[in-house]
Length: 253
Image 1 (tube, one colour):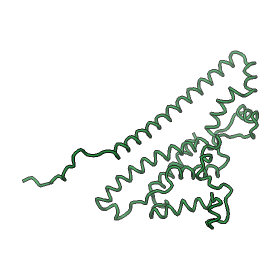
Image 2 (cartoon, rainbow, N blue to C red; image 1 turned 60 degrees about the horizontal axis):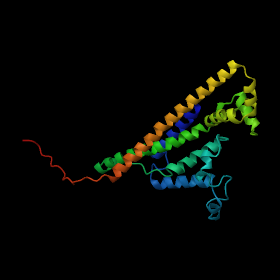
Image 3 (cartoon, one colour; image 1 turned 180 degrees about the vertical axis):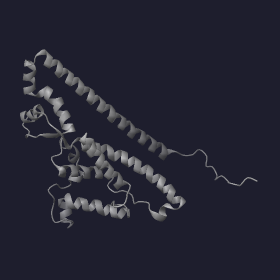
Image 4 (cartoon, rainbow, N blue to C red; image 1 turned 180 degrees about the horizontal axis):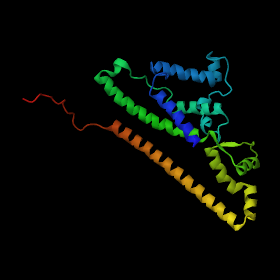
């Protein structure tokens, strides 16, 4: 499904950013990462305080949208690519505004560097889990699904503008709501012959099964997050009962 392709694409970019890979903001140091995220805000989301401080020429059309929840879940579908980008920027501020500096070159050559690299990989894995979960929510709301005639009619009936494409989330919302509140659907149901009613029941059962599977899949991801949080807590609280001396390694005679 295109929604999940979009989510995977965004997640890949966020993974590279979090790992501070080449050409990413923190590759040469965390200071560059801070400068990058600051410039992103000032370029697209500058607010009145920023403008008064002389950091930008004036407040943007979407001030502080990179830190507002409505940028992620303000509607069931993003209006355009700019809205998708804003949701992506909100997700960055939400999860990992600035990635730690990359470990490079001589930093990795020592024992201390290798120890730091192990801890960094663990950090990256946890951040990837958190970021990818939000990226999926962005993918669900991108306009990627053609709407049927009935779905388009429902949007018109409730006073929304006509549209031919919707998001995965919006389509599921339409299919759930129109069978409860849509006057056209209710009137059509009254005049349906028995065979048509049976087909409608089969469609609703199929939709219910699909939603249950999606709930199950999301549940698996939630349990993964819970397991990660538990592991992090145990690791943080672990205290050896006895401090052991460093073992002496001697060659056997």
